[in-house]
Length: 453
Image 1: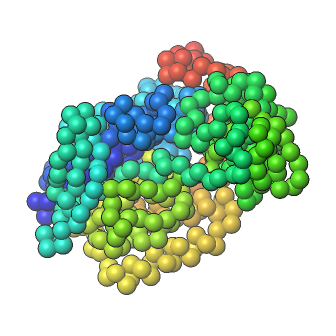
Image 2 (image 1 turned 180 degrees about the vertical axis):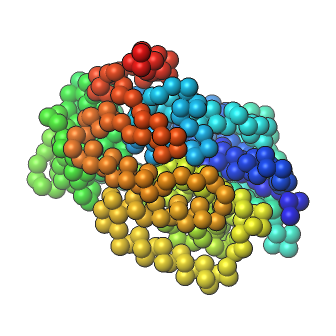
Image 3 (image 1 turned 45 degrees about the horizontal axis):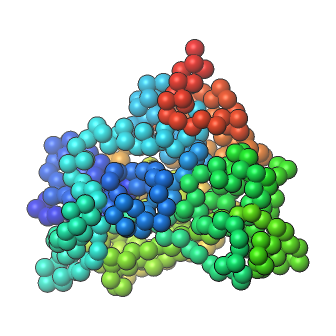
């Protein structure tokens, strides 16, 4: 049955995966429902759509993106490769395992440009409010067309939320921070390391943002980088110039005091304190309420909202896998909406969700987390015709990546891996990552061609 209408909020990797999943079905000659996708930015790509702006965008909306200059992939590209579109197919040449942001964005666009997905997307349009009309089994969604400054409504039989969860900063307060004389920002507003050259930098947090921003600032000339962890340290073998310290206590002007009794003066502070799952357009009874974890509560198969079977969330998990996980979720969601996957009774769904959450609670190490998400993706793939790929081998690459980072946080991006999709071995980038300061697409591909000669 395809005489229904699907609304997709967000045209980042998750929303694009949903469009691509329906297109894959259509290419097989099968009918698909009416689809409309709404994106508040002026282009697709979500987090990968870089902007120099901070705070609010062109039309006064809170900025979605947390992307910054000089970002290179912090995981092997072979671990995020689409099963139906390889890096070699896109670029026509071999490249390194850790490409920069602009190269990855080009790859994302390459697959979607082969489709007519743009015809389904209305840009510069933000969702304001959602109602569920019980007797009609439909969602009523209020949108603002930012460019035209017009408000309108649409009705959908299914609603897919693909807005991501790395946009609304979590901002803890530290006594005295309001009197800190230097720059203070959240990682969401970090746009590059240039402004922190020759500065003593304090980062607060102990996850990927702190790790990557800290190393980037070190690479681009910060005088020193101190990472203050809140619960446990990142635990890398840091080079001279980067260190971790116990939990921050408070500030007095430019001096930070730590709970171990030490103190240190800084020129700037970056809060790498995570993000909130935030859905201001959803009413309380449809809002996903979770912290950043591998298996959020209330999502059957990590996708279908347990309290409204027509509401679907994509990409809401903490992520080792990214693009290929969004794909497997989208393929599952597509087949569910098309009636190919029956939904168990709510009691059974609650039991299954609890089992996954209990299993996650038993995970302790990074390798445990990788295994958990590997099993999750394999479970989703068992229901659909998503192109098969060796998920276990990708999981092994993730584990090697964890060891690479532990061995040397400054050169793990110089390692190479082999695609499980087409067997292509990556090439070594001719310049070590620590010495490569030009991350443009043109420079990266030109240098890759030269090193292949």
